[in-house]
Length: 202
Image (cartoon, rainbow, N blue to C red; front, side, top):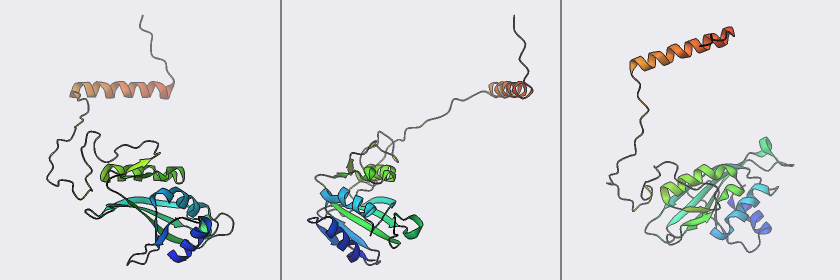
């Protein structure tokens, strides 16, 4: 089943939605979806008995600066066929779902209500591209520190940026303190193993 077959099912289930074949040179089926329709399309791809794209593999993005629209959000889905079927199995296959997003309003609805596994990869896209996912339950940076400025995978991100990383170091113990802690731990473990109560200190 190629992109044409998927589009045929979607157009029947979602009349009026703007959908197009976006299959690239690699031949993997891909469809182009309008931003406002993305949740309805994803839910139909997951739930329609002829499609059953129940496996959410990833979501990523591309920056085509200075083109307009600048960004493209790409969802990677799969139907696992008879291995994971709802009723009659649909044919096993993969699909890319592409959504174009303007630089002036870099946001799109979160897919977490349809695919809960989208949570962390959407955070990565937000962190690295600056595309916000409306309705995400915990949208914050995931790869860069909280105080980081900018989004490193944008094409206009300054490559020579210098920023001191926030550092954390554990509490340092002296050798004597470490040895004492080990001795106390051994004694505690021995008492527990033998079920012997320590003597009372009166």
